[in-house]
Image (tube, rainbow, N blue to C red; front, side, top):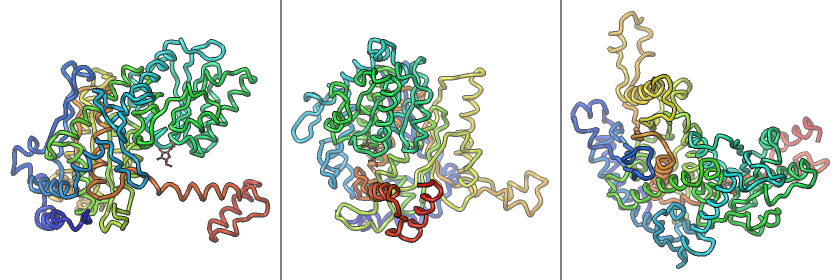
Length: 561
Ligand code: F6P
């Protein structure tokens, strides 16, 4: 493919940005076009049988508070077409090996293919083959039902109510985020721990409050070779054996979620207690796979299945909706617009929803591990910016911490705001939810309209020296996502997949491989080498640069090594 910035639509967008983009005033656009909201918003509907709403939940995506005209969107779509977005999307859904640096298909959509259409990789239907998607789902259903009902017990016959998921990256962030988001549906007698960090504090704190007789460990690792996870898993195993005086039965208390049976067996877990998946599932896309077992255990398999079904609904939308109405495509193209033409560096995602408090952390991996790349498909560096720095926190908390910069800082920070119309906890006669909604609406409005110096003066009693400090320039773009009910499993599934395909769209336009992560390797290799050096007497880091060596020597001295 020709470099993205040499495509004809890129030049057209540059010219359009000079004339229209730079001069665009959002609040004027709304005055000039009373239909703007309708023209720039789209809904995606989830079927009634999986939704929190009796007639199905509508999710409204309002793109109207973005710095775009109809022509901007037409040009962005033209760019996507010239970059081969549809072809790339169809290749992904056809099981082609679009992760070309690892020669792998990118097929996580098969994990949520609840309509069970044939989906093939290398000529094999991954749904119905032995050990394939449906078999693993059935294994997850049986196991989660057994644990939840108490039929599967620990070695002393007690129900397992303390779940410790040991995993990191995609083997942690998805399960943590989703179990938190669906806490309303969680088993009330179950305690969940997620141990990821190699910092011993993480596992120590989880074990400190655990009883081996009632604890189930889920060792979650696609590769089963990740240093943090294998080390934490071994510490857990040792703790279990010590606490049970060697009587504890590993096969009742440890299961593996992995693609690597050989390593699972070496660790001491029976393959019968392994929940497998294939290498066409990327870590950051794996919550839909066996890696989601903690979710199924916590919220029950029927809810896990609804989660998959909601995700599938968004897959179908992405596959079939015309680009102009295709919400992940529009979200991704807006990100390209801000990144490449406005030089925006960041993407803020703020859920107005406490249950979604780990959603931004989850999206950080999804977005930045996918699109934090410089090299394009022909092996040469991109001559344009790629992945934005994604960050966020739930609101209203974020408003009281970093929103100052979003409103009055020197940077343009495109933001997404997410709200559910209905709360699972409508306390104080729903007052909290109405206040939450008022903030969701007010923040986007304030970012758009701002406040002029004259408006500040009109408030009266403002010394002239303070006026500039109280001015808000406004014209800051937001995308508002409104779930037309409460956020249940299906609604959450659809929201996640919105961001997955938004990320796909960005990567397709930028012509990068969104599915590898070579950038995490160098640090891992160096850490392994340095770990050895920490144990070598007399090694004071002389082989390193002066800073690394000096710090290594200081660490050894302070830690008495
Ligand atoms: O180091 C990054 C990474 O490979 C992520 O992509 C992945 O989600 C995480 O580590 C964990 O990997 P695994 O599931 O193989 O332990």
